Amino acid sequence: MKWIYALRSFLFYRALKGLLPNKATHQLLNVAEVKSIGILYESKSSADDAAVAAFRTRMLKEGKTVEVLCLVADAKILSKEHATIFNRKSIGFNLVPEAEVVTAFLNKPFDLLIAAFTEENLTLEYISYLSQAKTRVGAFQVNKTGAFEMMVNVGDKKELAYLFEQSIHFLSKINHD
Image (cartoon, rainbow, N blue to C red; front, side):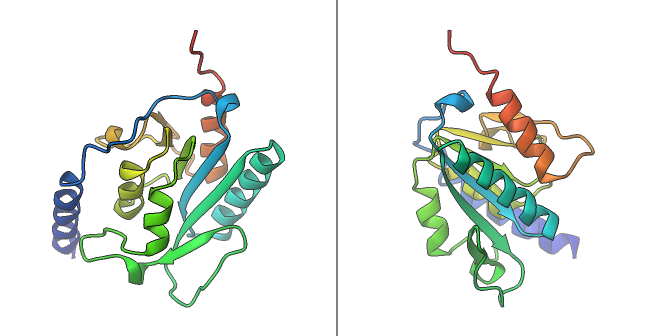
Protein backbone atom coordinates (compact mmCIF):
# COMPACT_ATOMS: atom_id res chain seq x y z
CA MET A 1 0.00 0.00 0.00
CA LYS A 2 3.00 2.31 0.33
CA TRP A 3 3.21 2.50 -3.45
CA ILE A 4 -0.35 3.86 -3.63
CA TYR A 5 0.52 6.65 -1.20
CA ALA A 6 3.73 7.31 -3.15
CA LEU A 7 1.70 7.63 -6.36
CA ARG A 8 -0.84 9.91 -4.69
CA SER A 9 2.00 12.05 -3.28
CA PHE A 10 3.63 12.31 -6.69
CA LEU A 11 0.34 13.43 -8.23
CA PHE A 12 -0.20 15.86 -5.35
CA TYR A 13 3.15 17.61 -5.83
CA ARG A 14 2.64 17.68 -9.57
CA ALA A 15 -0.73 19.41 -9.12
CA LEU A 16 0.71 21.81 -6.54
CA LYS A 17 3.73 22.68 -8.69
CA GLY A 18 1.40 24.00 -11.38
CA LEU A 19 -0.18 26.41 -8.89
CA LEU A 20 2.99 27.79 -7.30
CA PRO A 21 4.32 30.32 -6.63
CA ASN A 22 1.40 31.68 -4.67
CA LYS A 23 0.66 35.27 -5.68
CA ALA A 24 -0.17 36.34 -2.12
CA THR A 25 2.26 38.62 -0.32
CA HIS A 26 3.42 36.85 2.82
CA GLN A 27 5.20 38.42 5.77
CA LEU A 28 5.74 37.79 9.45
CA LEU A 29 3.39 39.73 11.70
CA ASN A 30 3.55 40.23 15.44
CA VAL A 31 0.52 38.69 17.13
CA ALA A 32 -0.51 42.21 18.26
CA GLU A 33 -0.91 43.20 14.58
CA VAL A 34 -3.16 40.23 13.82
CA LYS A 35 -6.86 40.97 13.48
CA SER A 36 -8.07 37.86 11.62
CA ILE A 37 -7.03 34.25 12.11
CA GLY A 38 -7.68 31.12 10.10
CA ILE A 39 -7.14 27.76 11.78
CA LEU A 40 -6.73 24.63 9.73
CA TYR A 41 -6.79 21.18 11.33
CA GLU A 42 -7.87 17.56 11.06
CA SER A 43 -10.24 16.31 13.75
CA LYS A 44 -8.50 13.13 14.90
CA SER A 45 -9.45 13.22 18.58
CA SER A 46 -11.61 15.04 21.07
CA ALA A 47 -8.39 16.52 22.51
CA ASP A 48 -7.66 18.17 19.11
CA ASP A 49 -11.20 19.53 18.93
CA ALA A 50 -10.96 20.86 22.50
CA ALA A 51 -7.57 22.52 21.86
CA VAL A 52 -8.86 24.26 18.74
CA ALA A 53 -12.07 25.36 20.48
CA ALA A 54 -10.12 26.72 23.48
CA PHE A 55 -7.66 28.62 21.27
CA ARG A 56 -10.50 29.99 19.13
CA THR A 57 -12.31 31.21 22.26
CA ARG A 58 -9.13 32.82 23.60
CA MET A 59 -8.52 34.69 20.33
CA LEU A 60 -12.15 35.82 20.13
CA LYS A 61 -11.85 37.23 23.67
CA GLU A 62 -8.80 39.18 22.48
CA GLY A 63 -10.98 40.80 19.81
CA LYS A 64 -9.71 38.83 16.82
CA THR A 65 -11.96 37.28 14.22
CA VAL A 66 -11.39 33.54 13.88
CA GLU A 67 -12.44 31.02 11.26
CA VAL A 68 -11.76 27.30 11.55
CA LEU A 69 -11.61 24.79 8.71
CA CYS A 70 -11.64 21.16 9.77
CA LEU A 71 -11.00 17.95 7.86
CA VAL A 72 -13.07 15.07 9.23
CA ALA A 73 -12.62 11.41 8.34
CA ASP A 74 -16.25 10.42 8.85
CA ALA A 75 -18.58 11.56 6.06
CA LYS A 76 -21.51 11.15 8.46
CA ILE A 77 -20.34 14.15 10.48
CA LEU A 78 -22.18 17.09 8.98
CA SER A 79 -21.09 19.89 11.29
CA LYS A 80 -18.92 20.92 14.20
CA GLU A 81 -19.87 23.66 16.60
CA HIS A 82 -16.70 25.70 16.19
CA ALA A 83 -15.68 24.89 12.59
CA THR A 84 -16.58 24.65 8.94
CA ILE A 85 -15.90 21.08 7.86
CA PHE A 86 -15.04 19.05 4.79
CA ASN A 87 -14.46 15.32 4.59
CA ARG A 88 -12.38 12.77 2.74
CA LYS A 89 -15.09 12.34 0.10
CA SER A 90 -14.22 15.82 -1.16
CA ILE A 91 -10.54 14.98 -1.67
CA GLY A 92 -9.30 13.82 -5.08
CA PHE A 93 -7.07 10.81 -5.66
CA ASN A 94 -4.13 13.24 -5.78
CA LEU A 95 -5.04 14.36 -2.21
CA VAL A 96 -6.10 17.82 -3.41
CA PRO A 97 -9.24 19.08 -1.66
CA GLU A 98 -12.13 19.86 -4.01
CA ALA A 99 -14.77 21.20 -1.60
CA GLU A 100 -16.19 24.69 -2.11
CA VAL A 101 -15.60 25.51 1.56
CA VAL A 102 -11.88 24.91 0.98
CA THR A 103 -11.79 27.28 -1.99
CA ALA A 104 -13.59 29.94 0.03
CA PHE A 105 -11.15 29.48 2.94
CA LEU A 106 -8.13 29.65 0.60
CA ASN A 107 -9.24 32.99 -0.78
CA LYS A 108 -9.73 34.72 2.57
CA PRO A 109 -7.00 37.25 3.35
CA PHE A 110 -6.37 36.24 6.96
CA ASP A 111 -3.63 38.05 8.84
CA LEU A 112 -2.60 34.69 10.33
CA LEU A 113 -3.15 31.09 9.30
CA ILE A 114 -2.27 28.45 11.85
CA ALA A 115 -1.88 25.04 10.26
CA ALA A 116 -2.68 22.98 13.32
CA PHE A 117 -1.31 19.58 12.40
CA THR A 118 1.96 18.09 13.56
CA GLU A 119 2.42 15.27 11.06
CA GLU A 120 2.40 15.20 7.28
CA ASN A 121 -1.06 15.88 5.87
CA LEU A 122 -0.81 16.71 2.17
CA THR A 123 -4.44 17.82 1.89
CA LEU A 124 -4.02 20.44 4.62
CA GLU A 125 -0.57 21.39 3.33
CA TYR A 126 -2.16 22.19 -0.02
CA ILE A 127 -4.37 24.73 1.72
CA SER A 128 -1.36 26.18 3.57
CA TYR A 129 0.70 26.51 0.39
CA LEU A 130 -2.06 28.35 -1.46
CA SER A 131 -3.53 30.38 1.40
CA GLN A 132 -3.85 34.14 0.95
CA ALA A 133 -2.94 34.65 4.63
CA LYS A 134 -0.20 37.17 5.34
CA THR A 135 1.51 34.93 7.90
CA ARG A 136 1.32 31.13 7.76
CA VAL A 137 2.49 29.18 10.80
CA GLY A 138 2.82 25.42 11.18
CA ALA A 139 4.77 22.64 12.83
CA PHE A 140 8.29 22.10 11.54
CA GLN A 141 8.58 19.48 8.83
CA VAL A 142 11.61 18.96 6.64
CA ASN A 143 11.03 20.13 3.03
CA LYS A 144 7.82 22.01 3.89
CA THR A 145 9.30 25.48 4.32
CA GLY A 146 7.43 26.84 1.29
CA ALA A 147 4.12 26.38 3.08
CA PHE A 148 4.93 28.63 6.05
CA GLU A 149 6.60 31.89 7.04
CA MET A 150 7.26 30.47 10.49
CA MET A 151 7.62 26.87 11.61
CA VAL A 152 7.53 25.69 15.21
CA ASN A 153 9.64 22.70 16.20
CA VAL A 154 7.25 20.79 18.44
CA GLY A 155 9.60 17.83 18.89
CA ASP A 156 7.79 14.97 20.58
CA LYS A 157 4.96 17.23 21.79
CA LYS A 158 2.29 16.53 19.19
CA GLU A 159 -0.59 18.18 21.10
CA LEU A 160 -2.25 21.06 19.26
CA ALA A 161 -2.45 23.10 22.46
CA TYR A 162 1.37 23.13 22.56
CA LEU A 163 1.58 24.19 18.90
CA PHE A 164 -0.85 27.06 19.57
CA GLU A 165 1.03 28.14 22.69
CA GLN A 166 4.41 28.14 20.94
CA SER A 167 3.04 29.87 17.83
CA ILE A 168 1.65 32.77 19.86
CA HIS A 169 4.81 32.93 21.98
CA PHE A 170 7.12 33.28 18.98
CA LEU A 171 4.78 35.58 17.04
CA SER A 172 4.74 37.93 20.04
CA LYS A 173 8.54 38.22 19.71
CA ILE A 174 8.43 39.52 16.11
CA ASN A 175 9.83 43.04 16.01
CA HIS A 176 9.75 45.19 12.87
CA ASP A 177 12.09 47.92 14.16
